[in-house]
Image (cartoon, rainbow, N blue to C red; front, side, top):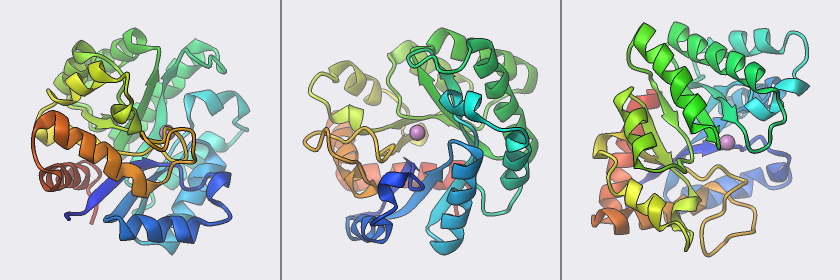
Length: 259
Ligand code: NI
């Protein structure tokens, strides 16, 4: 079958420390030969960049996740800025807004979200956006940026909203990426959204080690499992798995400008 790209995996996680090489070979064996390794702190971003040097098929992004901001040390943002300009880095983030965990005061989350958007624009890198129970605020920030600066090069990752949110994101130029949540029994609404996203804007991801797809829920997730999400996407779009692999991989290559 055609190759898939896992556009969002936290491969620097401690949970992969013991067996990353095996995890990556299982991914390759499953046809997942390219992965985007997403940073969430300055140290995690550095590890993603290092992983990208070790494994040429891993493409790093660098950023500070909204839930990690209060733990950031002086100088961490400067480290992100400096890492972001290294030629192998394909994206800025994971950034965004999160009202579910509420670990960082919301005004600070917003300030850092805007910082990441500005950095992505300045360095011409795709922005990897997280949104959890904060759609209204996320759209407000994005619309303000969109009105000032035009289309936003980036992805709404692990999409979990309804069509109006997807439509608004698409209207500002964003891609939409679906995770293992798409396979959950109670996710009929999400599958309906996935059926409507234009073919040139859709991508798949695992968000490993989180969000294992059905029937692996509860276990550690890994990039090989992106096949389950792609299969579910093929069903809802009434196309072949090969077609899903072709279009999602092409979209990922274009968005992140993967070589
Ligand atoms: Ni993530």
